[in-house]
Image (cartoon, rainbow, N blue to C red; front, side, top):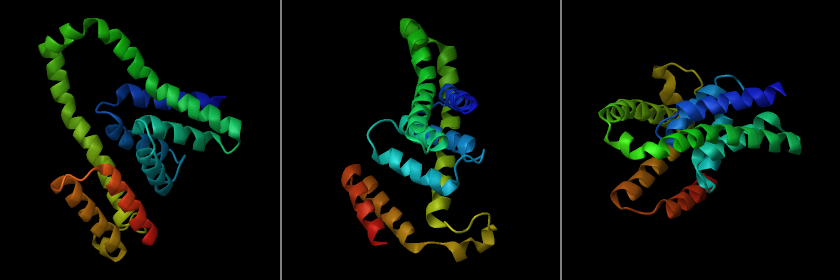
Length: 192
């Protein structure tokens, strides 16, 4: 029972203090589950990848998968873990929206609220960049571990870097939809 309560408190805290949506939550979830030793970093990267390609919000998908992984492998424990993590990461948003919905117009015109939101934007960017650097390390330098910066080139992976650059170019400069790019990346990964 303690495991489920700990799972609830961790994901409730993540849901309560994560601003900027699911992408900003990635680094917070990583800090909580990888930092505590619940899930290895490479497995967490796979969880995020699966959460990105499955329908639904990435934070909810990640919470669901982490809950199942931490509480499993028995089916009923995994199912309960998934439910607890998903419920607890979503509950703070539900509560805050229910409270704020009545006085939304007043909040929108409040200079104090605008100031708070302007102040939170840099933290959202920092959280997203943390997630980006986590995935860059896992993708481009998977065997490096904690190697010193000068030794990183010995661990560098050329093909994932080339694929990343190509997909970025196609999406950003050629405005190709993410769906065919994801299919292309999956096929390229299969070939690699």
